[in-house]
Image (tube, rainbow, N blue to C red; front, top):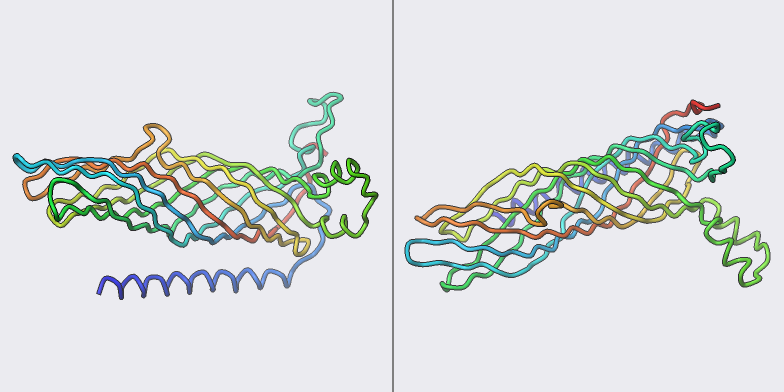
Length: 282
């Protein structure tokens, strides 16, 4: 029954993802050029989130102590979205503040991002009894304030082009023109729903904590309003102590389990410009 419920939940998640893609595809119908400086956009995302969990802990039941130690991993789909502003780097500050400094016109993005649907399951073996296998389930939701720097691929290619005497290469430059390499990160908040049991004792806790993320990837301008992006993200879920702790009880046992969590994600997203306006320093 549990496997059937998980299968049905997986089908439901796929339906949500496909519905989102269908809505995003409809956005291509109203793509029009813009000459403004600042773009307000939405950016739905989906992908795969991989968790590597190193578990360590113990539980005591009378004179018997069970020690848990080991590592396991699991992968889960993710679904998220962001709203933000994109502007040229040289329009972020008034020109008078910069003096003779000339900043490039690379796009810079400031956004608020929420991501969920992550649901990880893994097990940890124990010593001291033949039945000690601790099963854990972690649901992770994050809210981040991010900033991203988009570097045009033509800008990155130019040093190699002239270093190796490759000439102007107009076809290569035309092919690279819609592409950007991006990198950045952000800080924010995570809500972790942690459940664990070995069928003797168990624990259940909701943990609110500071979180951070860094990432990099590539984007491609499909139209004047729509960009496709793909990239990697590392999520830090326990920046203060390096671990999250679950208190367990039941069956006369008391103890705690520490989780060292590493989250690696591969994401695909579509950035859709909703409207544009002139920068404040024009």
